[in-house]
Amino acid sequence: MQKKLITGATLALSLAVAGAAQAHTNVQSISGDWKASNSTVVKTADGVHFGTYADGGAIGGSLMYKGANGLKLSQVDDYSFTFNYKQAGSLSGATPYARIFLDTNDDGVTDADVFLDPSLGGLVTPVQGADQTFGTNDDSVRYNDDAGTAAQETWANVKAAHGGDKITNVLVTQGYSMGTDVSAMVKSITFNSEQFDFNVAPVDGAAGPKGDAGTAGVDGLNGKNGTNATTAAAAGVGAAKVKMGATNRTLHVPSTKGMKLVSVRASLRGKSLPVRARSIQVDLRGKVVGNYNVSIVAKYQTKSGEIHTVRSTRGLSVTVR
Image 1 (tube, helix red, strand yellow):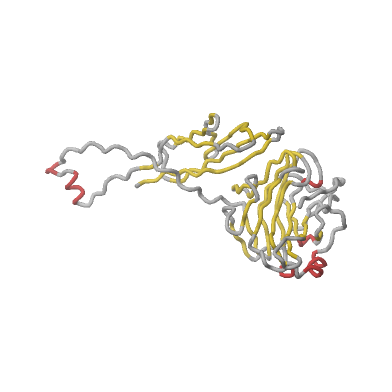
Image 2: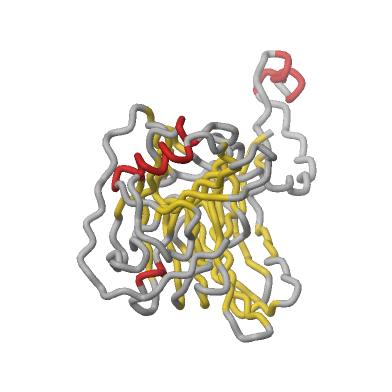
């Protein structure tokens, strides 16, 4: 389903903030009950980032929650999402939006949805670059009307009329609507009084491959009173640990079929890394033991000239053995 909204006059938008959640859950990675629809939806330390979408009417992405699948709509007490967004213009329909996909005839196939639209069908234009929350507590939703052709309905009325519908997916989407250079950041999602916080540090990446083993050192001279290496070992003196991974590492940005790589930026703990073509140099020589996450922003150009931005994190580590 695609969201097609008419452009409304820019009005002041007052979004009601949902009440305090009974439970908070930190979501460090998009995994388990959480899934991204494509690679443009990326977990960062500030939240889940969407885009940037050069053409917000043609492309987009969704963050999906499978933990509610199988529930009836009547069992949903509340659903809201906290977000901010940006666009090159001022179209009301460029804001992110949420949906609850439903199976109305118990055949396991999605055939309706509840649409949560912060622009209220194009009547208002949410403020750009500011955190705001929208959801069922705002009491303005639409049933099976993505295009916004009918009036907004109350959440209570929709639940009463369609409470037997079963949930097949819960999701927040940016794009597939309108606008240019559209992006969004989702900070949290609340469902049935459980608040899932995404503005937390991502889980550490996987350890990188071990470096080559070093050559054996030269045997030391016998010490005072004839103490040598064998004697020291017998006395319980441990040998020095060997550091692994503290080398000059090279990462490669993957190619994408049908798109041309335009630029690559990479950083490690806030400092830029040297990049040459698809290769990123990461000098871990002299680094202490620990995890080193490399943030990568790659821009690709499609055959039609559109720019596609992909953000990723590569985990490296320095260990001892």
